Length: 189
Image (cartoon, rainbow, N blue to C red; front, side):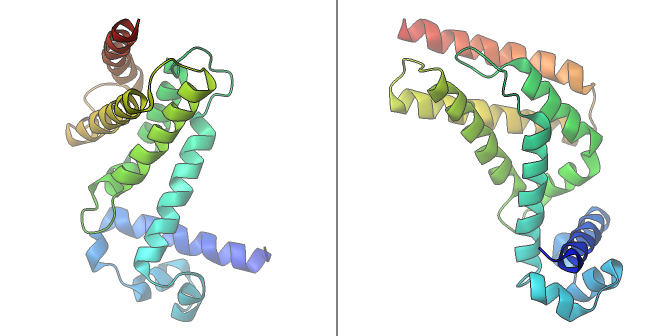
């Protein structure tokens, strides 16, 4: 990719991400994005069809960054370990303003859905790699339960102004997830 193109895309995305932490998504205009990125309006449209496309690309980039910084290739056992969860929550805590904003956008396909899908995929891949002896329906239900619980707790954490540290949140969430994992494993034994 041409360095100028990459530089413009980065500037546009950064400008947009700053704007969505300052004002409602629906009130942001392409002109504001272009002005903040110090590019012309046509440059924005040469990379993105509209602000919804730009939002989708920003969400995709945030999730890729989140996955890269939190994924643990050394995890073993039938279920993901606590460390990737802790790294994920710490990364979200470090960029709380951006993630809180992305989770609160209601008038477009939500970041919540994308985040849940990412977690869902990671858990399913981990379960499949470890050949967990569950039928597909049980796996699907369990994975959906786990990802919904994780994303729901993260949303609650933001809505409550992060009343505990990432470490404490992870410990408490992990305890709950472990209880439910044990119930599932015991039921299948």
